[in-house]
Length: 289
Figure (tube, rainbow, N blue to C red):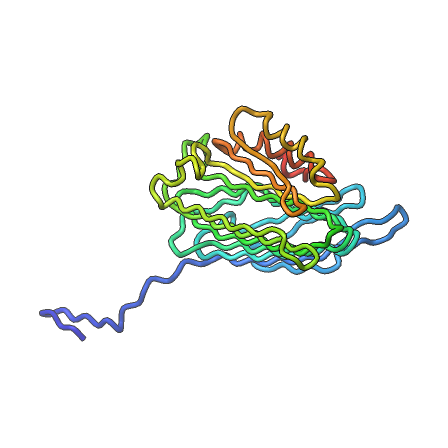
């Protein structure tokens, strides 16, 4: 007890303000082929969802299935955690997307985290096509993407980010984005990448070796029987627009494309036709909304 004149202060009686409520979500789903009167189709085997993360399954013609992720929290802030797992059994076909662009707001309590695990069986096709993530000033996001596939699996993966909405005049002067990719084929690591963009480093984003004049970017990765045969079309799409830059190559039997643009709209002008060219079943309809 500390006494000061007529006032007394007891440190033990003081309580810290409560921590803000955090969003936690989990989603796990397994799909497999099912034979029917009209032929084979991919259907749900198991499904688990909890917290703020939900899955919706549009009815589609044909054999492929589609899952749409919905974050009912309306965005991510520091301390939020999302965990998602997708499994496609041999000979199945699945595309996963998000209902809208994810938004990462200013953090007052560490990083928001998104962990994604994908398992793709032999002869199966999987497309992971989340819409862009918008990082607002002060936002902090740590993402990880782990994929286990077979040599005969077909993959299409994309992660895209926008640092502030260019058309709204928004800028990102602080914040951090960390992205970790690990792709294993037949149990062997064939692609590993760690991206760390720290906007707190004054002037770092603007240097030519970083983003230069661009504030929207994406990585696209695909695996099929002959990824090299897609390169000419992919490069033609990347060169189609005057705004932005991009390139594509084959690494360890995987096609990899990089895109960068001044803002989200300019990025989409390249990204949408590129994904439509590579997606076996076409782009999910929510990409057109």
